[in-house]
Length: 514
Image 1 (cartoon, rainbow, N blue to C red):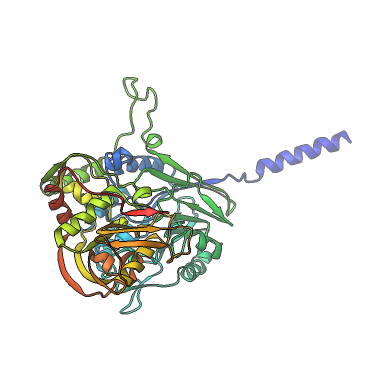
Image 2 (image 1 turned 90 degrees about the horizontal axis):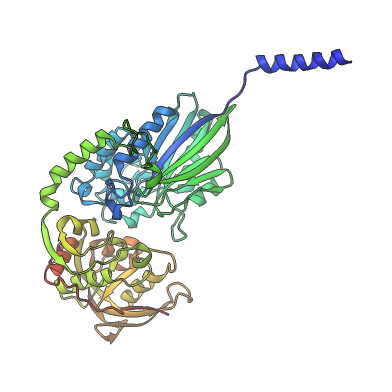
C-alpha cells in the first residue's frame, strides 16, 4: 500500500515535470484621449504630463514588454494655437515621433473639415480609423475601418474605431455636410463579425463617452455588442480610475488634457483572457522620482523623449513670432472651468458676449460655452493666449431671430442641466430664469431682451458664432436664418474688446436658476 502511494506521487511528479507549464502573457494597452493638443508639461496649469515625458514612459515600457500598444481616443489634432496654426499637421509630426499605434478621430478633429482630416490621416505613420463615418458622395469610408495587431507572443488583437455621431453638430456643421454616420451599434456588430474569427482579443477605440447627454455612449455599445473585450474611450472627459465593466467589456478613459495616462493590462493564457484591469497614471506617477538612481546617487527624473522634444522645439520656433504678439494687459483672471461655464452664467461668458454686442451693435448675443477652452489670465495677454481661450477660428455673425425662436434656443441651452453641456449659452442683452425641475423645453421663464419682456412675434438682431447659426451643439432652430452681416473671427473681436476694456468691466446676473 505504501509502495502504491509512493509510486503515485512519483508518477504525478513526472507528469508535472514533463507537462508544459502554462504561464499568463501580459498584454498592455496604454491610452490617451481628449488631449486637445496639450503637449507641454506647462499646459493646463501644469497639470498636463507633457507628450515628451509621456512618450519616454511608454517607449521604456515597450522595451520591457514588447506586447504593448498605444491607442488614442481622439480630439487630438485641434485645440492649442501651436497646433491649430498648422491645421493639425504639427500634431501629426509629434504623434509620428511619439509612436502612437492607432487612433480614432474625435469631433474636434473634424474642425478643419473632413477633407483635411483625411489629409492628416494620410500623413500619420499609424492608422487613423473610424468604422462608422462615410462620404455621402460615393458611400466609401472616410478613414480606415480596422486593423489587426499581431503581438510578439503571437496574440492577435482586432481593433476597430467608432467616432461620435454628435460630430455632425459638435464640429462646424458646414464642414460636416459631406459625410454621414452609420448606426454606431450596427457598425460595431459588423466589425466584430469580421474580426472575431481572425483575432484573439477585440478592442474598440471610441470617441463616444459616457455622458448621459450623448446620443450614443460607449456603455450602450458595450451592452449591445458584448463580444468587445476592451473599449478605449474618449469624448466625455471622464476619469475612470479603474475603468467600468459592462458585461464582459472593460471601458477605460483617462479624463482629458493629458492629466493622466491610461493603462489597461490583460493577462492572456491558453488562448483566453484570464483577467483585465484598468488604471490611471497621473503626472506624479509618470514623472516619478526614484531615490538614488542617478550616477552620483542623487534622485533623477524620467527624461523627456529627445525626438519629441526636438520636434516641439522646431514647432515653437516657427510659431513664436505669431503667438507672442502682445494684445494688452488685463487686471484679473477669468475661469473657463467647464463645470461652471457649461452649467451656469460665467464671468468670461459675460465678457465674451458683451464683446459681440460691442462689435456688432446687435440687440443681444448668445455663445455656446463649448467655445471657451481655457482661462484668461491676468497680466500681459498675447495673441497665443487668446487663441488658447478661443481655438476654433469661428466667425461672428448677426442674424435676424424671432422671439419665439430665441426662446427655443434658450430652452435648448438649459435642457441638459445638471449635466455639463457645451451648448449651454452665455448671453448679453438677455436675462432669463429657468427651473430645472420642469420638463425639458418647458423650463425658461421671464425672458427679457434689452430690458423689455421677450416678444415671441418680434424679430431681434442676435450676434453669435457661425458654428451656432449653422446648427452646432444642436441649435437646429437657428439654421438658415437671414444674415445681417458677418464680422471678424471670435479671437479678433474679443482681442479688440479687451484692448479697449483692460479692467474687464461687465455686469453679471443674466441667468438665474430657480
